[in-house]
Image (tube, rainbow, N blue to C red; front, side, top):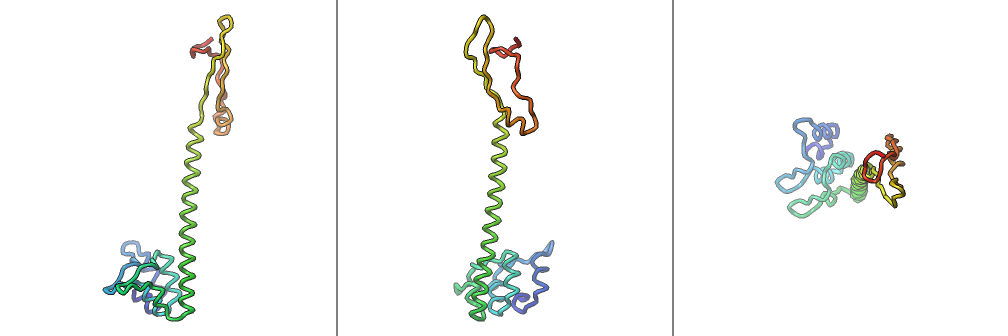
Length: 161
């Protein structure tokens, strides 16, 4: 909190990403103020950007129910802060959407992989020979590199002719 309040910008990323003792940007003080509250009140616009990019929540309110943006030093700083919040939220939403699309693609690939198979339909028997109509997922097998096609030479019972 002190680094964001006093503009010690080079320390912020180090404190927020330390491998064993990373600081939580959402940790409140005794009045519920977070690092964003302090950076906003001090007019430290770069600190706001760093904190937001490291997961600080701009919606946390202190014990007086004031969000960090309410402590902005100037009207221009408040507008900048609001714009930063929108940008960060948009990036988060884009990341969630990209992850959901990736999951959908993987599920579709799994479903396509399960469609491989064949169906045999026996329509009639003529003098002991079965006329077998086979429908198979030959295209999918070829796309997947299997390329076997439909097996021939079997009668309706599954035995060799």
